[in-house]
Length: 577
Image (cartoon, rainbow, N blue to C red; front, side, top):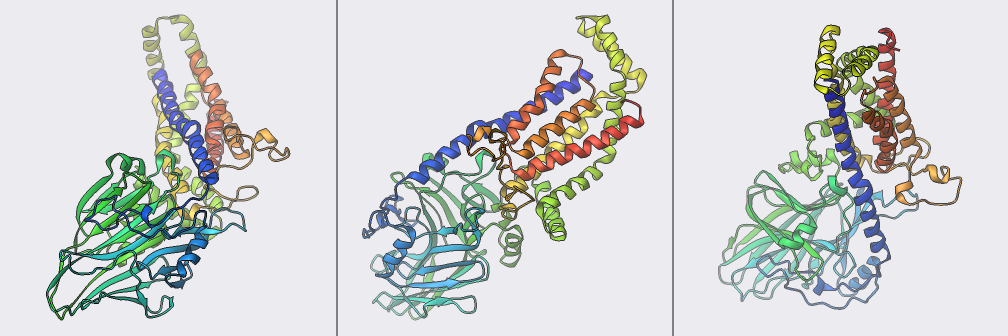
């Protein structure tokens, strides 16, 4: 039984080490290389022809025609240049700022006012949406289809007239286009104080004949950034359609090119680690939704098409939908889910397999942080609460481990007595355990319980926007990022930045030391090989966890320290030390 316990612990530890090592030695260098390539890449021309067709009935490689963007223009220069041909409707709320283009009636310029790119006070704000023609074009467009090819429909090049120059939360802007055939198209666009746009598309038919129109909306993206979520986080096309979560990575679309879905209501969009751009159709409408990749370009889109609507002569029709573009704040997504009846909108946040733990953990940490004013302190308090909840289980386990440690001399005698006869040794061990009323497997229970807690807390720290750039004390300015210090430049005293695999910070060292101390309290394995494995594990985990979020390493170190105190007190009481 003791061998089974040790083997189980080693198997669990090695499994965890493989997962962590994959991120540390493969994914992290790959991501760093991709980001370096992206950072050094020269800005190049990306004109309207580089954005694939947004008409869901057209081939994905269909293109539009404007080619007036000058090579090397920045995003701001592209916006300024396009203003010469078509004015923009500016908006500025407590959460976002930007503008709508009257050319194509697109939402294509949006900056998040409350989020900076880095923790540097002078860092620019996150620019989420960018117009066609910029290097990383990313925009929303809504329009109509018709089976009557004689009807002139608005296109991406159509110039719409606006009833005002500024959009605010108090009143919508109305964009109008008259096709000269007796059909007037209108878009009524409003926004709230957060990240939700409401778009009502309206058609007034005075053409002298009955017509049919089909509404559609699209999110188009050119050159998406390298995924930052490693292997534990989804980034790319996403949606909840017919009650089921649909996800596709960009690299998957490179092979499949198009994925289609039928749904009643739901939502569809593109997600990054912290940001989401999503289309929310009328929840009573049957839609056809797609994830699409242009086979010849690095262009992606998600789109949906609603039901065909009849516009008889002299009548008007309209279709209302919503578009979200902003930070994935859990409270806000939950609020929209309730207010707008959006199914499972919180699934835009990848809570992982332990969803039933991750979300409650987040709310607990947020509540505690609201009381103490710091998420780092909240993690320490939360760890104490978890330890208290698991105290009966841990107490029983540590008592068993204390008894095991007291049995070490007898176990050594049995090993010498039985020699290489492992079957006889196991039988003798079982008799000893039965006589002393010891259950060696009970020591594994705290380890098994800690695994889902560890990964759930990892998810909270890694995917929630609330943890992004949340400071602790001293040198920790972002709990969701690794400890920025390193032993190999004497924690900043030497003016040298080591490579990523040598970034062994103060908190990982503290964690490794507490892990070493905790092992000293445990009964030593009888097998010499196992003894060596256990001896190197603190050093191995120090290196592996150095690339993990600082908040998680702080949790682990603090949890180890609490476990040491608890285990030491129990063992002292039982006179095992």
